[in-house]
Length: 258
Ligand code: SAM
Image 1: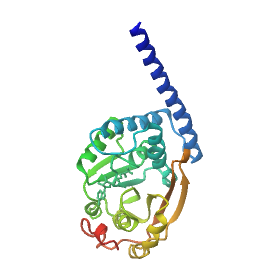
Image 2: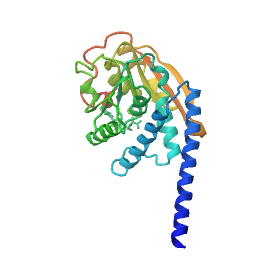
Image 3: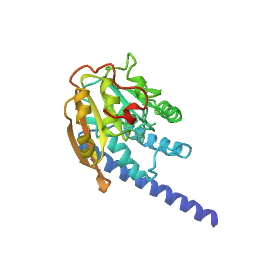
Image 4: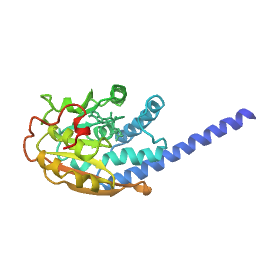
């Protein structure tokens, strides 16, 4: 009898999980279609697998404070994919600076397999986890680097080499631009993910924008579903080659922003 009840509870719990997954699948596909992105079943499964890997690794490393599955789909996956409209042509070279546990880089690499991604973070343990995720997700289009952006941005093969630099929750705008702008070629884009605080950050960044010779940004605002927050993407276009003095040495862009 005991066994019967336990088995029934297990089946009910699995059925509940399955119902939750199917509902998530439908909601997610609908939200993605609203932003003009369609996805295959394989891509959806890879996104789900990535969240599972992130959750498992989070027990050992501090990669995310979000543990609820639906919240993770919205605040991590959907939010990361809001940069999809900037993937304008196949084969783009993309760098995700301060990727942490692989955001926004991994979800975008799943959705844009022809784009070539570099994911960088200074925390070695995080990058080891990200490299493991990419291996398990079979993402040959991702190259992982453990190191500082200040150093990478002076290396041939990376400096002024990218079409698109992405940064989510890495640093205030003034610091971020000094790190990111040298990595993209003239007329490439830097896209930063921000919340409503972007207004005060932008107000402080006038000097930085001028020194790094980029245009004032285009601002794309959006609301996450289910009232999970207001977000903003700022897209900066670089006008010309960046002076060799930028970015300054490790830590200076944070301590003494331009
Ligand atoms: N982008 C991820 C996300 O949205 O979840 C992670 C954000 S986490 C708050 C910021 C990450 O940026 C940290 O993992 C930190 O190690 C990395 N970071 C900050 N400054 C950096 C630098 N100068 N070079 C390399 N990584 C840096």
